[in-house]
Length: 215
Image 1 (spheres, rainbow, N blue to C red):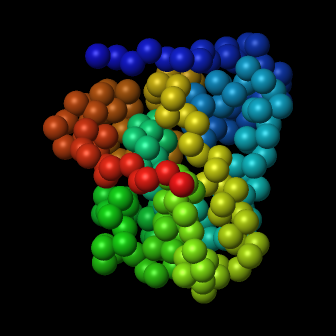
Image 2: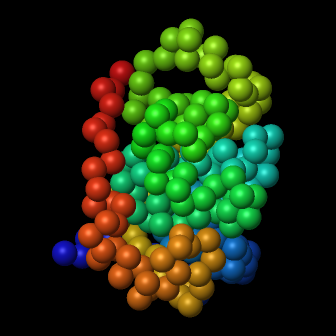
């Protein structure tokens, strides 16, 4: 059964030229894809706050991009946000540090042999933020062992940007259609997306792990 979309897309003709230019960038480069930006366009301040934050603390910034992409994907898998979980950062993929076997191990990252210690620390940070886990000195010693304070600030702020879209039931290939920028393998077109989501092993159909006890 199709899910009901909860907030509409703003038509391109109702956006300013500057907003339409950013939408073109979304269609060409992805992350974010144009659908999520078209929702934020209801409030230009929200549109630009997100676009600028995404540029400054995801695409650029002090913490390595692939680490931030793994954290983003952890959140999407943990809370089953299909819109976020079915796209990838082109920059992170091209770095060779984010691949599909790694993505498949995100929920059980602590037990996985696919991640380095720094990556596991970042994912533990994402886990704690997502599920509001209590943290202790041991947790923070681990964070400071692998990250500088500026990196922890940037990574934490970025993780906090990624949790809202799950509620909206938006879908790819609905705004500025015909582009595949930043889509995950098997989701590049509307037809491929539908086929992948119908497959019995589609990731969102699997149990992604019980919710953690909230603090």
